[in-house]
Amino acid sequence: MSTAGPGTATEEPASPGGHPGPGSTGDGTPTIPSGRTTPDRPHTPDGLPPTGPAPRPHLGLPPHETPTRPSPRTPTDRTSTADGLPPTDQIIPTASRGPADRTSTADGLPPTSPAFSTTPRRPAPDHARNETAAVSSPRTTPDRTSTADGLPPTGRTIPTASRGPASDHARDETRTSLVDTGPSAGTAPADPGRWPDVAVVPSASRARVAVTAALVRRALSRLPLRVRFDGGGTVGLGGPLLEVRDPAAFHARIGTGGLVGFGESYMAGEWDAPDLVAALTVLAAHTAELIPAPLQRLRGLWAPRHPKDERNTPDGSRTNISRHYDLSNDLFALFLDDTLTYSSAVFRGFPAHWDRLAAAQHRKIDRLLDLADIGAGTRVLEIGTGWGELALRAAARGARVTSLTLSREQRDLALERVRAAGHADRVSIELCDYREARGQYDAVVSVEMVEAVGAEFWPVYFRTLDERLAPGGRAALQAITMPHERMRATRSTFTWIHKYVFPGGFIPSTRAVEDTVRDHTGLRLARRDAFGAHYAETLRLWRERFAEHAPQVGALGFDETFRRLWTFYLAYSEAGFRAGYLDVHQYLFTKENPAS
Image (cartoon, rainbow, N blue to C red; front, side, top):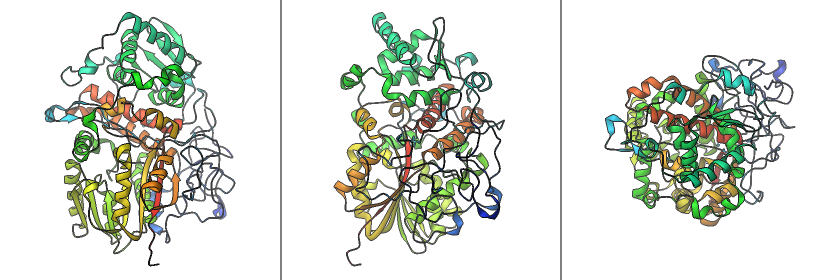
């Protein structure tokens, strides 16, 4: 259990006289340590560093969003830095980075993030059986006070009660999976027509299953987990509970499919966890240790490879994007807030609350618009429309926006929203690949798009930003990242996320982003701000909302196996950010103006 106190971030209101409360900035924004903060810089209303030449007053909270004092049991973020600035306050020249891939934090751990992932192949819901369905995924920052289970504070709250994480034993008893789909709840068998690789346990020899069982138990026995095998005892050092209800099937799937099999075993209901995020956070924090070193070196021989038809060529990208984003606008509306924004928000305090998510999404968007210096008359190219919220806010500033998307479902609804807002004269939404964009713009904005591009096409993507920017232009990006060495190790591996959520996706490291920009464009990195802890909270709110609307998800034609898939995806992504395996960054790149 974690309690708020000096040196920890809270949603504490400012002290009288405008001085910040303990561990917070003047407006209650949690502070996060960083080894590269820049002192003596003014704060914006959200507690993050100024993003543009003229910070705008609308970045602050609306009156109804005044932070409130949390329960004393609520877990908090990390210790504040000497200058009181969050870790996102970094101005990083292109040359000033460490040997790895990210900003160095005071805790020396890598930033992480789950913003984009991959999607497995599966049949679509009943109303769209002829379409192939897919699913998606999303970032990091650790080194906080350990909770009783050895994990960093997660800042999660349960929708029906306001409480912080309990001890490992209490957590097992008081928290249940957010979607009632565990084997103990009578998980329905997977439809073999929709889910062939889930419905049937893959055949594996007794020797393979036995070797897999020995390796799995050996790896899990060294982790701060309690793994209980039905009829086979418990292993682990203590911590969150993971229950394996069908050990034979569990080991057969892992033995034949690795981590893809691990995810499919969850979809089949062969294992579960009372606190799924806590269990997955432990696994994410020890990813490099789960597979023995000799097998790691032979990864190229045993790890599944990406299907060739999922390369992100222009045609391949259309198919990959459709498999995730064209699932159903109604599905996404059930767990996203009213802005329909499907990327990390920027909160003013932790734990985050659902009724503040829309304002936090606007805060994130406004920071990007400020980074790109977007205002009246600015010509804006947006790569990746989503459901149009960024384009709407840019148009409200008087900008003229051309937004590109490959999702027909998203485009149709975004156009409706643009017309309803009265901005049809300022916003054009085109069904167009980024490689087909033409013209020049004062600003380019792209939110969590690079993760869907694929490593093979990163140079093309960043050259497109350069070519589309007018001299003196600015490009503002938001991107999920992972540690550089893990990125290199998994670059060719086909994962559960690829198969069921984000086909063709691949999360870069900050080093990969910056090296690609340096080697393939004339753009200059002006700044990079990290806020992975905010993504973890965003994902928690989505996950809880999805669980609350499980009956409505079923009514849309998405069966129980899909609901377990989506729950696993959101929890898996959240765990990545909480463990520090993933991070999310906002970047500003600028283009030189020879005439100036």
